Amino acid sequence: MSTRASAYAKDRSYFLLLLQVQIGELRSNPDSRAQVVTRLRELFRMVPRCLENAHLLGDTLFYESCCTFQTACHSAIPILRKDEDPISAYMAADQLERSVSWENPQ
Image 1 (cartoon, rainbow, N blue to C red):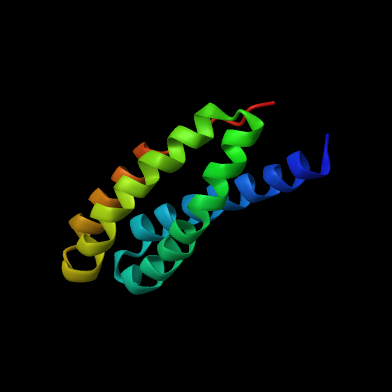
Image 2: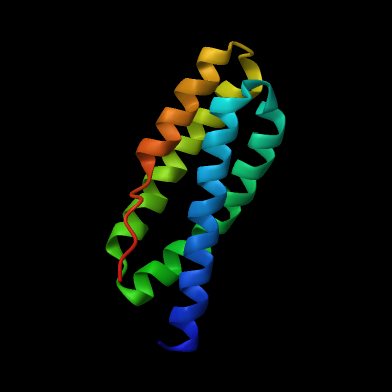
């Protein structure tokens, strides 16, 4: 595995793990919205690099997931910032979870 592919695999794993943790946090502690929004913004800032590397390495599945995640973030973050209803946090978690393919290419 090349150095670029190895670094990409680590970034991809970190991205998916951080997203998975945020989804779990929204479901288990809906009151943690502010912290989750901060971490979602961190993930959002990672997307351009993830898109570039996924394209260069031919990881179409992750490329498409990142594109869909961007759209999901655009709707989830405002909901999490404004609405304090726990149901909204669960709905945002579901939306974020559906945005990403959790398959790990070998």
